[in-house]
Amino acid sequence: MLSERMLKALNEQLNRELYSAYLYFAMAAYFEDLNLEGFANWMKAQAEEELGHALRFYNYIYDRNGRVELKAVKEPPKEWESPLAAFEAAYEHEQFISKCINELAALAEEEKDYSTRAFLEWFINEQVEEEASVKKIVDKLKFAKDSPQVLFMLDQELGQRQPQLPGLLLQSEG
Image (cartoon, rainbow, N blue to C red):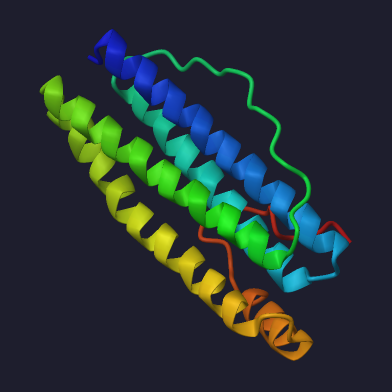
């Protein structure tokens, strides 16, 4: 059974994961408006992945006989100065999520909740991958500067990303 402190912290992280999905959907919409469909595709796949993370927390809370408390998800930004600025914001967000996951792991250790600590190990490793993948795109965008050719090539590359979850978020109805 989860302590009240751990339950509250896990519910807060569930909310953060839902916000992450909102943020990446907002970024996808921004890129759609710029006709950068590959960038939008990448962000939609990222949003879907974040929903999967939220679902892991949701299920874990119930598996440990806790109660999920869904709170309002704050509204994400809608505009960024450039594709680079959007990906820099995504990178900063992933660093924030990594910090939060690490704090959860520290709390689990402090509370001697080894089941939760083991559960969080997957997220600790996942965040290394999350940060690295976004940082690579930031670096490529910095290299591209204002080159439309490089931006076009990167848009094509990012359009190849497939969702990791067996979902339908990236498939259109038409």
